[in-house]
Image (cartoon, rainbow, N blue to C red; front, side, top):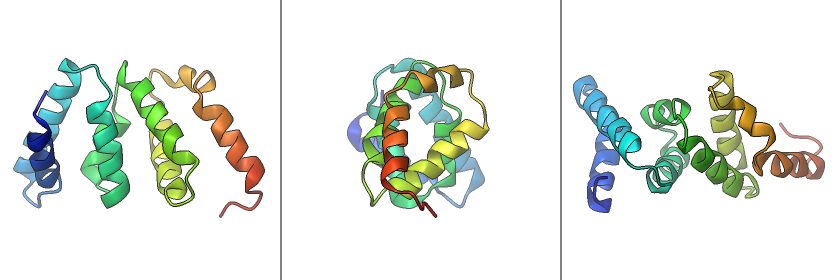
Length: 127
């Protein structure tokens, strides 16, 4: 796994206007995700996506495989209860679900589902 400082540098290059740089950085992130089974990198990518709406970060997050599905759902669950991030995090969840990941059956078992239902009950007119 890349050092924390290197992750910051990689994130800065993730949205490079140079396609080759962006592809290389995306490949590094995917390699790190394959070798590191912990939640840190997924959490960092979610946070970065929420701050920047980065399309390359969104692409990486929407193509996550097991065991990172749990980390992603847990991080989404953390943010869905916060009004400031709710719309962006629900947008991320929508992008993930539209791609029908192989782990989609886990959504019904995840703590995220009760949080979503609670959110819907509280906010009857979601726009």
